[in-house]
Amino acid sequence: MSESTNSPSKELPATNFRQIFRDVLAGVLEQSIAADELNISLDEIPLLLEQVRETADSKFGDFTATLAMPLAKRLGLKPRELASGLILRINQYQLFEEKFEPIDAPIGPGFINVRVRDQAIVEGLRMACLDSQLGVPKVSQPHTIVLDYSSPNVAKPMHVGHIRSTVIGDAISRVLRFRGHQVITDNHLGDWGTQFGMILWGWKRCRDESAYQEDPTQELGRLYRLVRKVVDADPQELAQDSIAAALAEKYPEARREVLAETAGLHEGDSENRRLWEQFMPVCREEIERIYGRLDITFDHTMGESFYQPLLAGVVKDLTSSGIARESRGAVGVFLDGYESPLLVQKADGAFLYATTDLATLAWRVEHWKPDRILYIVDHRQSQHFQQVFATARAWGCRSEGQLSETDLVHVAFGTVLGEDGKPFKTRVGDAVGLEALLDEGVERAGRVVGEGEQARQGMNDAKRQEVAEAVGIGAIKYADLSQNRTTDYVFSFDKMLELKGNTAAYMQYAVARVEGIVNRGGVDRELLRREISNDSSVLKLSDPLERRLALTALKLGAVLEDVEIDYRPNVMTSWLYELASCYSSFYDALSVLKAEGSQRTTRLVLCDLTGRTLRQGMELLGIRVPDQM
Image 1: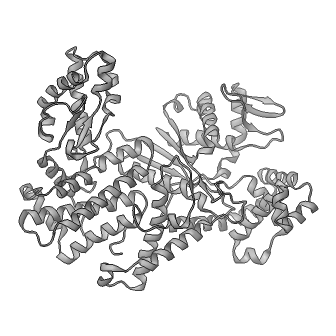
Image 2 (image 1 turned 180 degrees about the horizontal axis):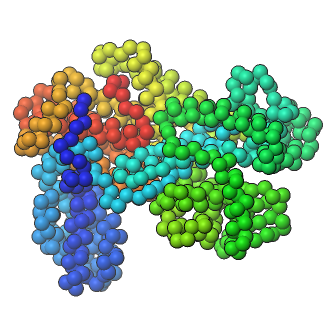
Image 3 (image 1 turned 90 degrees about the vertical axis):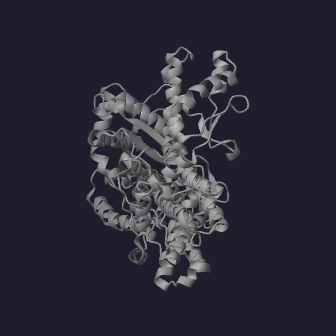
């Protein structure tokens, strides 16, 4: 199934009709400003162009521009008169004449609605099919972008609460790379914090050696949860755990002792360092195994321990430059507008998360020189990042002028909640483990894989397991990514693993349908593409369902732009569902293999492009797409 192309994407004209219309409007607005017909500045044009969007109903055209109403109100003009004047210029614009049908008049109070010419859609369809990028050009000014995401604490088993940062960050990194940016992903592991002090304390007092030998990560996780209860000394928790209660009674100074264990590790205590080095490989191996099942990799995995040697220097720099000062023995940065300072060193000399975050930021700016750094982290850390970013700006990260050119972005997301409406925490014993979720997803998918028309093509046990893994884990990823990232949601096995409706399985099944047509018809995709490359006249849109499917598939470029603007993968999932739904209507209503001549060629090209586009879209979400289901 060859994906060869006749020319690279960057040499192809745009197939992004929304952007083409915006380019036309930009030119028209510039002409109107130059002719003194509009009393606005050129700097205002980009914001006005954002008011170009798809029409809610295709009977009113394909795209609409609503800028005439707010602009007319501001300038004291009548919206329809302003829109009519713009339309006169739009209709005379050469690029517009090539791609869109002439506009008769404004719609309603002043909407400027346009309809793409069928021939322009056909040409876009041809170009997308012949291009490995599906007609989506690389960005003209690529950025170097660092993504910080996932970042679990290594000594604790990953649970469902870790899924969001991991899959959102992975999807964003894939989209940015596809668009042509230089992307650097870094998994900033929690491998040096207080949780290790708790594990060290527990290891020395109440470890189960046989349990550790059988499953090191589970035993270390048990120690962490147990010692956390002892340290917190919450009467309600202790009343429900007799072992923790007994330890709390036996070690009333547990909190202080845990901090001493942490300090010992940080100060180079030989025993604590030896244990840390013993625990780290098994913890990392367990985490990497989970990432392997999720098809997630990182360019770098540089944990908190990597930056430990830099922390004293950070505090010294902040203090000597007057950015930080001592208060009650601690050192903090006191920023305007915040009630509490950003502490970078405790009174006992210990460093904090903020210290590590500042050291990490400085190192990244110095070594990677990024244009943007994205932190994909729970919204509950919003104030922390606001203060870290403000401190970093004031500090300059020891790199004169360099940080001022780096955008620092907290890509906040909502929390995965338990049925009690509270965030999952590893200290709670009943938090659903991430691996248990993956296993359940694969098991449920395995019950339906191989049913229906695909089963008739034959699927052995190994293939069935491979497909079940793709479908089950894909369902979990898609269920999270289809949520608006800024909202909380209550975790539910059933909702997370749903295989019907707007789900990964629906998209995967649509691709399987395309493959079914190709296989049944013995279609040579390379020959098909060669045919339309040599003679574009063989493509003709003869049915509204063909037009709708083609136009929807050609939205990929606009969708990727929107995902990058606000870092929202759910924009992609919504469009994928729209595309799969369009294909389902097309598939159910129109014959493909029994059609003849240009109609058969056009429909095969539509199937080919739809299958490739759905597959590419799902892969940009980090979801595998099997050929059979």
